[in-house]
Image 1: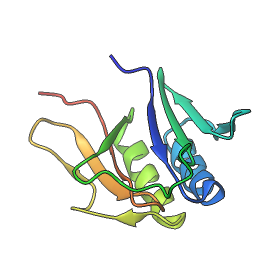
Image 2: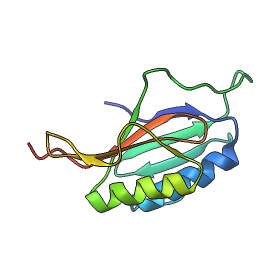
Image 3: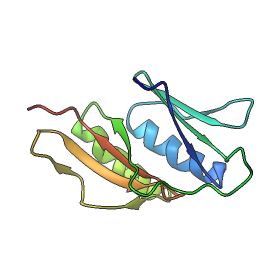
Image 4: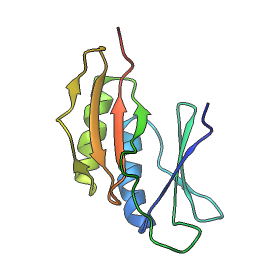
Length: 124
């Protein structure tokens, strides 16, 4: 359904540090800066893009918004969570945990405050 998710950042180098570490932890590759100054992360058919807002105003987070990223294993979820905390992310909600549907999930806020979750596929 979606071609990509785009989020704003007020500090692209700080965002790059966080997202490079977390995508590598998921088995992906570091981001690429495109000619328009956007960081692009492509992994498992999805794309996450990070940019400074084009209107020149400060980037703000969505209240109630969460970006979900697929992980292939429980180990990837844990590695993603640890890498995010080590690179200016903040643990939120609960520690990484099993869900009733059989998925394993973790939550973080990126350095700009965007809420992210990584989870394995549900087994039920």
